[in-house]
Every structure is written in structure tokens, then in C-alpha cells.
Image 1 (cartoon, rainbow over the protein chains, first blue to last red):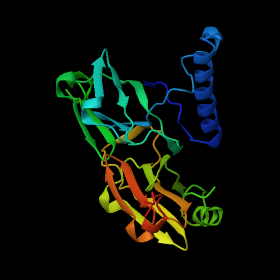
Image 2: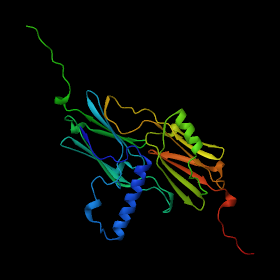
Image 3: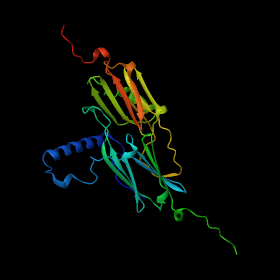
Image 4: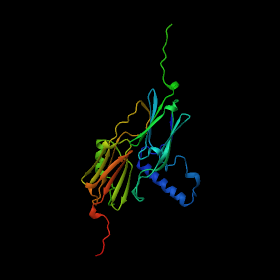
Length: 154
Length: 125
């Protein structure tokens, strides 16, 4: 199973510093009309944010849990294609005034993908969003469920 | 800095000795009438929130119930620890008027300034 792109892990001050630096760099890029070119634009750039994500498995289903505080249900998009679950969306700022005193939170678009280890029944996938936690239940396809095979002694 | 910002070192040390907490991400906005705190607490509901004012400190804590998920974890990034953060309260804030609400894991705390400290225009006689 592969889970890709998560940069907030550990949430260290250093990571914060990098985020700040990335934001500054973005500003600079705009200012100098992107004269640095694509060199600093790696896909794993610190300037993106990604929600923390868990994957659980029992005999009948997988459950993908993502921490997504502060979204609206309508702003979360889910897609399932070739056994890859993709969670994407956009977090909008709820603040009233433009001037922040101190900002640590991330806003804007995000996307995470999970490659599920076995086939799932895409028609039975269910998602709930409560207390800022997205839960996606993906029932396993019949052929992916463990089966007991009786040994007959002849 | 004269605002709600400085993390209280002493309390921070105490908390690491007792229980492990996660410091939530917080945005602070400053307006003429006071301050607003936007605290990210995914997995925390109304019942899990505890906001206290103690010796000039504002303590914001959130307890999360264990995730109701069946099965074994295959991959984990979330930390199932409670949230906690301590701020030193600016004396201009009227502690008796602090209000808060939580919606989809975002705790909003309103810290209004005391009425007599708000900027106002004085009309001439």
C-alpha cells in the first residue's frame, strides 16, 4: 500500500520555518517574475499542505481517516480510480479581518492519494465528515475477502 | 509584545512532565475590539473542550475521543493525543467576556477588550 505526500508530519518548528521560507520564496518568485525557474518547484514543495491520514483494515473493509478541520462538506472531493482513493479539496479562511496577528494554519487546495492493497467495492464506499475528521469506509470486494476453505478428508 | 501570543514556558514544561500533548495550529487575528483565536482541533467535539483562565493565562485544551474505527492500522500519521496550548492574556482583555464555539474541529475563541480600553472617538463639546 502506498500513501503519498504528507509534509506536516512531526509538525516541528523546523518544518514551520520551511513553510514560512517557502511562502517567502513564493512571494519572491512572484516579485521577480519567477526568475528562479522550475529549479525550486519540486513536487514535494513545503509550500503545499496535506492532511494527516490513517488507513485501517479489518476483514471486511478499509477505513481511511483524514484530519481535515475547518472544511465544509461541499469542499471535500473524493474519487476512486484503479484502486487509488484520492481525497482533495480546498480549505477557505474563515477569518473576518484580513490582517492576521499570527498565522500558523494552512489554507488552499490539498490532495492526498492512497493506493489500497486489495480491490474494493466502489459502489459501497461511504464517507462521513464529523468534528473535522473525514472517514471513508471502503468495503473489500468479495474476491478480496479472506475465505475459509474446508479440507475434506476422503 | 503585548498580546495573547507568548507561549508560557513554565506551564509548557509542566505539561510535558505530566501528559503528552500536541500543540494545535492557531491563527490569531487582532481587531479593534479584541482578538480572535482559531484553533485546529480535529476530532474534538463540544464536550472535549476546556478553556480556562488562570493567573493571567489562557489555557485552551481539547480532549479527543479515540477514533471509532475497526480493524488494524496499516498506516498512521495522526497522533491521538489531546491538544493543549497556553497563552499569556493581555491585560486589556476582559476575561469575563471570553466566548468560544467549535465547528468541524475549529475552535474559535473570542477575546474582547474591556469596554473602557477600546479605541473610540471623542466628540468635542
